[in-house]
Image: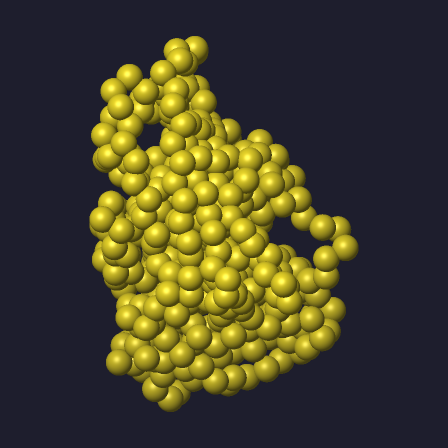
Length: 449
């Protein structure tokens, strides 16, 4: 049986969910969806319209198509398309939400057609069962990894083994799969964990006014209800955090409209609200990351205890010719497990680096010692920093309460100490090249107010 749904999108639909409903009879074993829209690329505009689909059965989301594709998608109990999870087709009222991120022309409207093919043919085979791989315990130490990556299960071009191999080649200790609004690739990804690489759960919650990565989730955390309402982001963050996961605002200062509607963080009730972390280094270092770093510092000045992270946001094989440098999170954790890595990040016991090693500690006048994320009493303090593998012509900067306190040219290896007598709220250390931007930055050491 083939069902056809036609509709129009106008400027009033921008940043809205356009619901389309259809009934699925008992005995349906497979559903195929084709989505077409026209015009796709408005005359005179550099960018096409930005439309996505979320398909929900009577119980909730079952297939996410971030940036709708014309080749269509299939749901069944054995081998659904990427973005969907295998499950028997539930009879009843289904909903397809057309998510209108960007619509660039007011006239004429954008026309769309949804062709839905319902099948009762027997689906042969069994769904793939992915057994999680095991990572040997290593004990307390510093671990390096990525918290933000994409695959063919959303808008990436890499399948799961290709993506995992990239991070194996970079010799990180952990990585997170964070496809847009789906968890469909997590089973296969986690099955590839081994003693060399821990693969963690995740999902990028991609609202119309900003994206957040939920690090450590293994279930669907959607930002829409079956009634078509958008769940307030503080409530989504609370649900993610209550599950034990890390809610991270990502690429907050990326260019927004028209380049990427939803990519720039615009949630006024989440600046930073109850978010636990902010991604200050997305992809390769550039001006948008510099702005994210300043935003992080401003939130620290306001008294927020929020953690800085980085994410490759990888979507396709890295280009050998692309200028710039990416970074990884270097986390002190009690072990190489998902819970321990997330706990280390939540505690702020981490720094971000494109290569250099950067150790920052402090000792108060009364003898209390602190590392990244710790809090010292408000009294005179000695700060200590040690670095390795710095680049030529690098400088080390001590940032106190958002302002540069000291800046020193450094060699490849070395250490420095500062004696601070005045009252302060927080401090971090940056390692920079004047000609090439940031190469490493710590999370703060805090002081009691």
